[in-house]
Length: 86
Length: 141
Image (cartoon, rainbow over all chains, first blue to last red; front, side, top):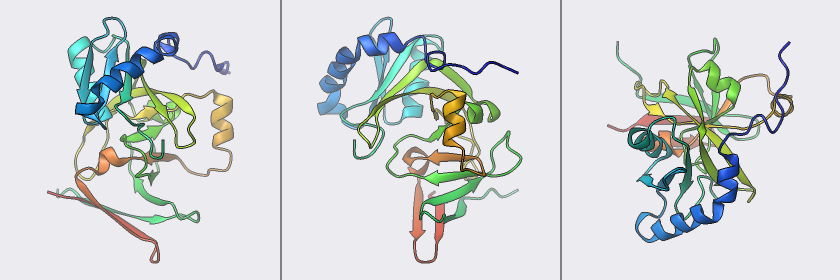
């Protein structure tokens, strides 16, 4: 029987980067807010470059097209959360 | 063969609107709860993503604040689903959890359940009749 994965193992190699740079990502989202409120930004964790689109699927596709599927990236909603009341 | 441009669903005992989706990898239709408070396409777990043939990209994450105000990080996945006669390429959010957490979450469930969000409803009309317990999602042309 396969060994069950631990909490740590279900994480992602980019967890530390997301945690360490959360302030920076929030600043990026805040800077974009006046023009792109409600859209999604996906940030390239290596270069800091980003792409913007109206939906998660669109921003994900745009990111893959721009930087490749193997490049680490973090997606945020600008000025809001993907979940209501948040 | 004409493709359906609407799907009918119902409300469960907890008054949650749902539709039944035929999803590749699952012999029985999957129950998709419609959550207009969720702005993405789908929320699924890792097991469901793998069975649906979606590619999970663990190097791509979504940071979010849940309605409970708790911060959460999801993995992103990528692939096609069959939805109202079309096969859009979408990026469902994948729940990060251990097998133990998954089993605990599913303890009372008898069927596969997923969350369907606003992204898949953008070109649709959603009708919910709470009295008649009916749900209709119609694609607008």
